[in-house]
Image (cartoon, rainbow, N blue to C red; front, side):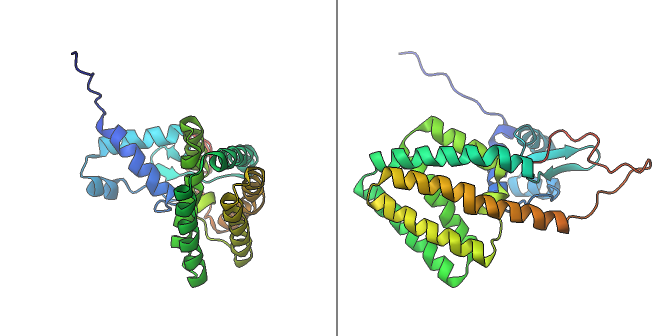
Length: 246
């Protein structure tokens, strides 16, 4: 029998996923310069594959590559929230409908366990771990839904809004509201109430999550230092960046 073709991936392609995950996990934060030298040491590679991987992420809108300054993690804007959050909400709504239709008792028990663990971290005030469990719960809905294309679209949008979903620190008010909504979600899943779970997920994204993102933008805009100017008094990074802020 003829052997299957061997798929060969370049070195920079193998670096894209871990670099993207560093951004999703908040290890590289919006507005920060990407530390190329540290990444070379971490992955045991030269700068060339690192820079090629960064170009891929810049094309996705996750990074900006600025002349003479290297790559920085892109900041999300109000316009991006208006554009991307309704798409995310629609994807989550569909995932909720499909998950309720397909979920086994074991699937529901797994999501309940993630939820209970997330609540433990909430009670302890451990937000980093809370956010990690939160992300796993939302990803579980897509896994249970069993639609590969839907999951791919979700990951694509999630990458674009990175820090505003499962990284940014919440106000106490936002955090409490998110917990109430998550309690209602798990109850809807356990009842296999597909319309209710779908509506809760959509409202969660467009309400609490969107509010957290806008608060994050306002806070980081106030904290962000001014762009250094060049010899003509023009702010560097605003003239020739390779991608718009995300």
